[in-house]
Image 1 (cartoon, rainbow, N blue to C red):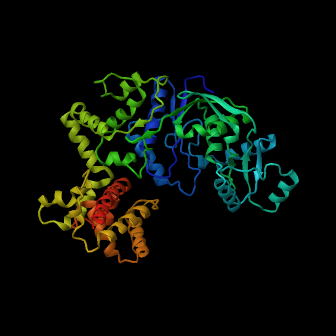
Image 2 (image 1 turned 120 degrees about the vertical axis):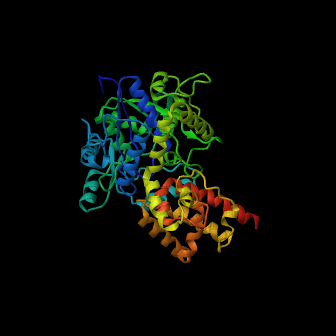
Image 3 (image 1 turned 30 degrees about the vertical axis):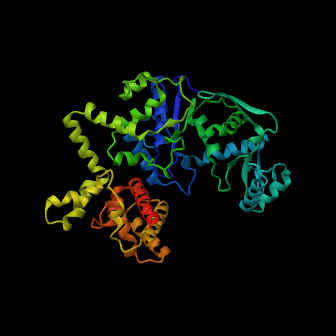
Length: 484
């Protein structure tokens, strides 16, 4: 595939706030490329047109740039194997779908979503894992042609061997064997002509000459589908490496429902990107106690992809705090510390816009910290007393906070106008006036019933911080409901 060193990639989907797990996988690929004199590439996998947005794509780019990682090819810098957005590559995939049909490695499927859901329900009821039952697998060519000419919608599915197993070697897990009868007949080309992740992923990796695919272990079960596509096309496979998932201290999967996971959250709270990369990089190296504080250059030097652990990478926030504190105290000069602090406070225009919003609400400059300090605070110190002055009961307050939490996740573009509209929708849903819904949110965001304009404040705080503050508020108010 390549004669000038390995080519690796990170391929995030712009469907939400960039996850620290993305930084974790990106860092491994970056270290691998730098260690072996290869190329690190960024590709945006936006085939999910209903959830992918340009705002989230920009957040991906901004978050990865914040971490200090750089790529030699990508949607923002170009390169010889572009475009680097899958949505701009749509025309490239169609011939490959037809090639698989012509070779007999794929088939047209006309099953409706309703029929497929009934099929899966029946399989689940019978205690079987849901997968396609092959109804359209052996349709005659004349029938397929007639149904297509009649305008009937269809997808292209891949054929799967009926016997034996897919055997391969993974760079982390070693020899792996997965029975073919556990592999689903994956949809490759959807009815709208867009490829699924599996199809586009393999084609793009081949066309971009990717030599090593390093990603999370959740994709290990998909390797047979990908290997089969490489074989069907007659292409050389990449080296597979599946990294252990990042987990909480209780070994559960790291998810935004339990803990903050957005890169933007850690940026907003004042973590240094060098400290976060240092923390994540420690999962990929072997060091002695006392050697934890490492720059990117030192991580590259110590990086050892042949000695990776299959144990879960524990996201220990206390260790991250400790490393971040050391970076602030030991790695920054006083001048650098002041510069970093001013830059951090100005992110997302929190400081300047917060001051503008404060001007009409104070009589002395000394009132600013109490009025607007919540925009820069890690924690606004919520307690049951914070909510005790509200006119709504604890149960009503909790209902408001929980409903807002869920509904704010629906917002694709995060700004004052969309937040305003969504909170008005929440008020309508709950059958309450907006002035009843907003007071609990004032407290959740600022710790006080007297604050800056709510919608503006939420926009400045950012989606990830708002999410976490609502989560903390819900926990506090739930304790009040339980105490009644």
